[in-house]
Length: 242
Image 1 (cartoon, rainbow, N blue to C red):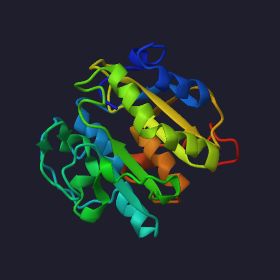
Image 2 (cartoon, rainbow, N blue to C red; image 1 turned 180 degrees about the vertical axis):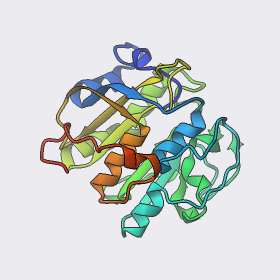
Image 3 (cartoon, helix red, strand yellow; image 1 turned 120 degrees about the horizontal axis):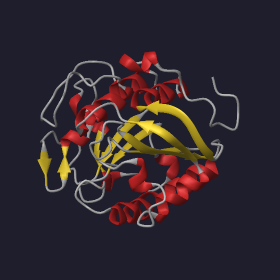
């Protein structure tokens, strides 16, 4: 999701579905983005570095390790699903309400083009999902151009049954924002739901690098970039998690 602060979302009646997930999952009350504007935050979450990007410029190409390449190297699977992407492997900067600046995996040349997929290709069965997936709504549904209510409705309609399956069958869903609405604290909502998640409000400070480090630890991957300076989140699980 895009460009909204913690206080914009949590407790807002325009986001009933997201608030229901926050009430029944792990809600981080001190989650922060890395910087402004949007694009470097996506890069940070996906690769452990902003790569010196300080704008929403496009295109960029990197040959560095990233979460997708590390999963594939470990014989796991990865795919990114972007709403409005014209076709698998599309490398353009924008078309309609799709923008590449919100789709970090496209920038990494070591990833097969087959990992860059339109959201229309999102599997209909929960057990057909890759090991790890990223989902990026388009500008109308990520709170960038559309309303909070539109995004909340999209999330429930498009991903609600996957969230329910994750809670039932042992999956994990993380919902986070790239940045807030431009403040210095850059405090954003981050919600984690799943069968092994202990519901509650967690006041520890996290950021995109720490969230990345947690995903790396879950799959025993090497720490990327600045995620190596963070400790994985461990206190939200219903079982010991190293």
